[in-house]
Image (tube, rainbow, N blue to C red; front, side, top):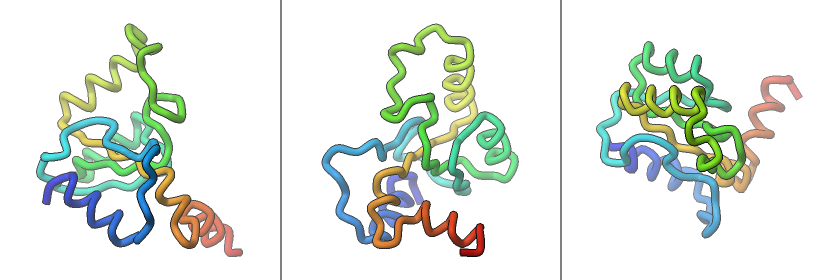
Length: 122
C-alpha cells in the first residue's frame, strides 16, 4: 500500500467529514511511497522518528506538529540547525509523516480524550 492509501483507509474508517481548512496533511515524504510499516505517535520527536525506523516503519502518523507550531509553518525556521537537521533526516531516511490532529478530535468519541481516559483508567 502507498501512503495515501493507508491514510485514506484511516480516514474512511473514522467516518468523519474532512474539514476544508485543517492542519491534517502530509508533512514530510511522498504520498506515493510504498509503506513498509506504520508508527503512531502523539509527537514525532527525533527520538520517535529514529525508533520508528528501527522498528521498520517508514510512515509515521502523528497528532502534534513536527515543526514546533500548530500550522507547521516553517519559513521562520530557515537556517535553524535543528529544523534543517530534522528535515534532512526525514528526506535521507525516506520517512513520510502524516499529521492527524483535527480529524481525530472531530471523531464521534474524540480519539485523544478517549485514549487519555483509557490510560488513566477513567
